[in-house]
Length: 307
Image (cartoon, rainbow, N blue to C red; front, side, top):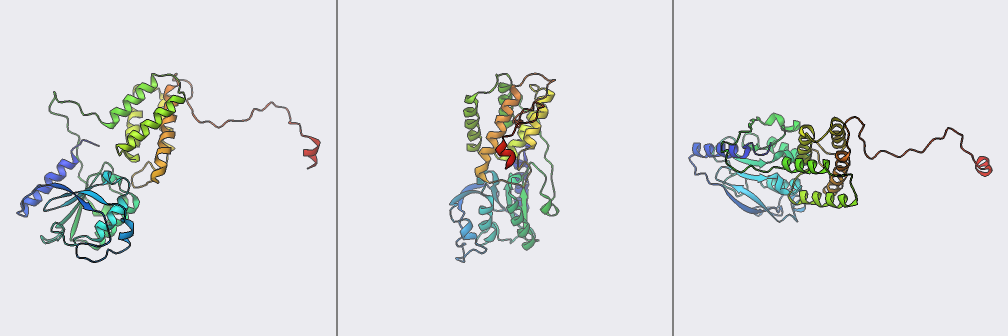
């Protein structure tokens, strides 16, 4: 999970690789052009890379003499368009990706790889098949490697270490934000129209901070299961509402324009569920209205019966 030290462990291993190759290891971050029109040799990119990345402009990349790294969470759900020119121009005019130091010398790093779209996973599979023995791809991920490319990877678990500095300020994580929101909602009354405006503002705050849908579902599930503010009936109803949402698995994405709609609907359901008190009664939301039945046959007009 976030804060376990995956990035730190990966960069420590990169430093060991640099020492083994007799190279200095200094990480710098600088923008690169995410354009696929032409590579550094002047040749046009293949497979429509120019069209796919024509409007992406610059993206931030991490560089050293042994690797090039990208953060999938910073690609704003455009990872497929960004990866196409990067993988198409792999090694063109670049010292770090020249592959001069033997097997697997070219190292590509992808942070937050659990946010890769299914199309990007296919691109990585193709890259590994075409460059076998000449490139290694390192990733940090909060989820297991997708089944399609799992045979190409070795998973290294990173345990969550307790903070040795007891006097240090506690880091506020997203799970704390959702826990505080759930606590406040559970102690408030039934929702009103003003709560709709609050939920909308909260959702766009999450999006502005680039919190991804897959990440949010994991944080919410943890909060639902561990919260002391919910009754068993409320807990089950919240999990049911979350399970009914689309695209809650890694490697499965939804169009970006639908994400605010899904989030607003989910949070409004949660707002209604947690405001219902009582652990013995069944909690349900958005139940379809049913017509009343009086037990008497309905009367039809003569015209309706004739027709």
